[in-house]
Image (tube, rainbow, N blue to C red; front, side):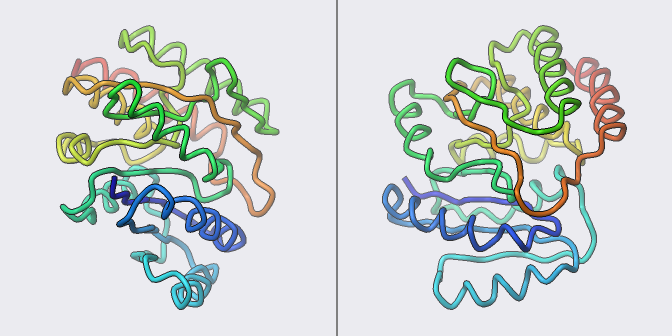
Length: 236
């Protein structure tokens, strides 16, 4: 297993060091070749932090954009940076919602089920959605139930950003990804299934951020999700 870890980050300087230290502590134990790659956005000083950490962690790299791209655009840029020598892609949030220490659970599940993509799920048995914002918990729960029912995909957490997948998944779908915002998470899963790839889930504890401010506004998020429904269903 050779892991390309992809993380979009918009004004997350206070979380970068802790996240990077956690990733470099766990990934080398399971991947002889690896890279941790950030799509950095904003002007909060994140680049200065990364440059200092690069002196210690050689397998750290990034691209930089001064303005926000949208999570979908950021992921697509990152997907196009994956070298052919990597066999797997790991994605997670930059705000410490996702714990790097549970990576072994993803790897174990992938080997056991022969899944092409394993999702870190807040909504399976053992999963916890500990976000402090009731509106986010409500929107996420309702959208997951609605989208899985409409698409017939038997997954509990279609909008989770914590995922381990084979490079083949990305190679097959990255040119089909159109969503620029948060619906990109669901779009990726739906198109992965349409290409015949196998999915599985492992429970995760989704933690509330400690530092910084979320970029997810309630009205914009709801608007984006509602707009996504007809687009994805029309093409199904």
